[in-house]
Amino acid sequence: MIRFFYLIEKEFKHIFRDKFMPKLIFAVPIIQLLILPFAANFDVKNINLKIIDRDNSALSARLAGKLSASEYFAASYGKDSYEKEFSGIENGTIDIILEIPKGFEKGLVVSKNSQVLISVNAINGIKGGLGASYAGSIINDFSSGLFADSAAAQNSKKIEILSDYRFNPYLNSKAFIVPAILVFLISLMGGILSALNIVSEKELGTMEQMNVAPVSKTMFIASKMFPVWIIGMAVLTIGMAVSYAVYGLFPKGSFLLIYLFAAVYLTAFMAFGLIISNISSSAQQAILAFLFFIMIFLLMSGIFTPLSSMPNWAQKITLLNPVRYIVEAVRAIYLKGAGFSDLRAQFFAICAFSAILNTYAVASFKRSSS
Amino acid sequence: MNAIEVKGITKKFGDFVAVDSISFEVGTGEIFGFLGANGAGKSTAMRMLCGLLEPTSGEAKVAGFDIYKQREQIKKSIGYMSQKFSLYGDLTVAENIKFWGGLYGLTKAEIRAKEEEIVEKLEMRGWENSFVASLPMGWKQKLAFSISIMHSPKIVFLDEPTGGVDPIVRRKFWEEIYDASLRSITVFVTTHYMDEAEYCDRASIMVDGQIRALGTPAELKKKFGRADMDGVFKDLARGAQRKDA
Image (cartoon, rainbow over all chains, first blue to last red; front, side):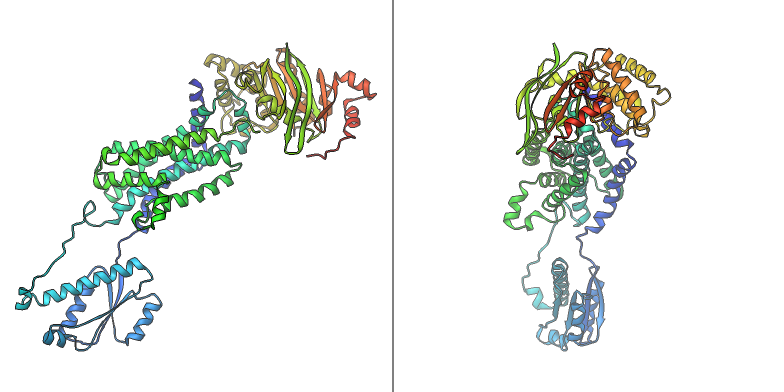
């Protein structure tokens, strides 16, 4: 057991004597948490709306005013023909064109029925779809306000849909992305430090010396993982502090539960890094292999895109992705205040990954070649 | 009891026979030179004895332990130093001594005593807290050797320990080897410098994976009618089929 302490002491010295590593460990979580939530922003704002008002009446001006007052739209008025304005959609400067035809007011007043034309640039599907529905709901609002005082409207029974967004009432996309970035951070740190760990001893030539020393495989692997584990937990702590300081995000559930999940998850993901390190013969190989896998793991984890919008076969594949479970768990703890009993399935899945990956990490570590 | 006993050990990589059924014994306390050109199979043979490589067939005992079944006991009984420099450059001299001493199960008091002894012997006082990476090559190698025998192993394996250093440093390194031998540590050393072969108690010369000659330097010189080991080696190596690796 005392050998273990000598090994750990050495590992910590390697990490903290590196000129680059300690800076990386503290700078990466802070920078990523400051930049990524703004970059990976799902809020759709500043939709470029071009209003072509051919009616030039009081009512058409009211509708245009209502649309341009909305914070979702950056509205401008067009005078040209629809075809000419449409070139704006083609070159991407306009997202939506709203054309109010001549006779709009007249139609509304006389027959209580009128039409407008909405053309949507759907190249960015999310922006286009949301923009069209925002515009639609504003126009509906306008028309129901118009008839509010009329007897006909009072008699007709209207069904209104009231939405109550639970857990993230203001639909703040940062509340959604920040807990996932915490997971992203510990995966990146734990994985990359582990992937470089054993292979760097191979490159230095000290691995051979270690292989003839009386140290068991398990102890050696454990000594490689322990310091990285501590760093991963430290990165998580820094990350949670930054999310509170910058975004005011505080887990609704228990901190301890987040640490428990992260503690087990890190052993699983570090074991994955070590397997890469065992198989690789140079740091370059290890990094390339790690990048390849982490891209797949992260894109299929639900960090950036919801799992439910993936095709069925892809959703099945994500069941084999350990990152998926921890993202679900950390999000649920942060946003819903989920407790252990809600997340039992995720916890046992992560434990299973840890057991399998660690067993393979020890097995794939060869002290003698054949 | 012999320190090393090897009977017909063979290593094949696919069709290539790197070590072709070699047999020899090394007595306790002996300095045994394991000579051969690059690619003759010296390192492969040595790596099998240290437990770094699985033999294809044959038997061997190191320090009385079987190389297939008792690897852990062998590891505790041997020291090892390879041509690749094997101390941690980002640890200081003292930290390297402490780390490897601790790993081989020395107590804190023993480690302190050893550190004192090594620093004294290598005339490194004042350098204890320098990073090993900053030391000159000759010092690094002597330090690596001192550390490889600090747990008083029965046998120390040296794989081309003097590769890439000048003759004066090599000469000094051999003084360390004699010292270890006087402390009844068996020394198994591979080299391709033939002048070093003269310093060995006995030497074997490997060509194309086989041991072609084995004996004291005096016996070998007499047998081949040569004035020095270099001549003996050239006679043998001329028949080599393999090119230098």
